[in-house]
Image (cartoon, rainbow, N blue to C red; front, top):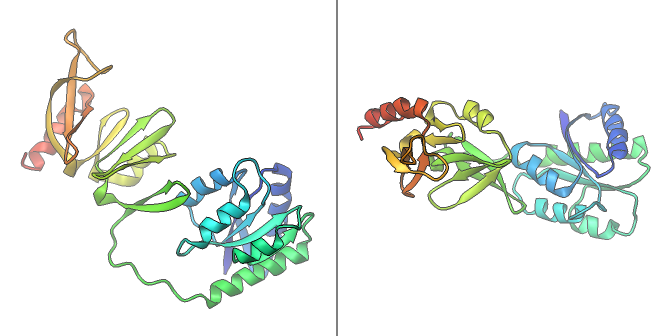
Length: 255
């Protein structure tokens, strides 16, 4: 098997050295699939990607590595954790957090390879996960340090705001660190681009009409086309070039 490794360390030089040591590992084979310079960056990365083991520093700006390890410990299917730190005083706490190993810098190649072997053994002995009940696609989002799987059928719309995208369901909103263009490509025909800043689930389109939309008016009366999103009864602006597509979606849905 080939282990997928995430490096989390605020020092770029430390990550560079670890990357070389990981790439030298042959039994088991291991590949660095991601890097993060803080716990927050790691949380965002883990919300959208998978890995088998996190090589995790402890003392970093912001939240420290033990906090991330504590969160991962409570997640089903979470990656294993190997602490890589310049300090020895956290070792007892690290093993309380179910860390596979605790390596001190500078890391020796033999010690890292032994730690990765233990990770591979743990994975081999773990029970196989239960098969999902269905093939419902999901969007994975980070929410206050947790990973939340939002069924695609629950998503009403996605709207770009500043540097982020807001994902809206009937119950709440989530923030994604992805571009709207990338999301449109991934989500396919279930969603309709109604504006340069918005994708709407075709099933959520309820009405199209002229309304006063702040900052979106395209005539002297300050009105523009807008689409009503059910069941939240929110209105999103529709660009003139997308009006025909929205009308077609309404006709196709018999509305």
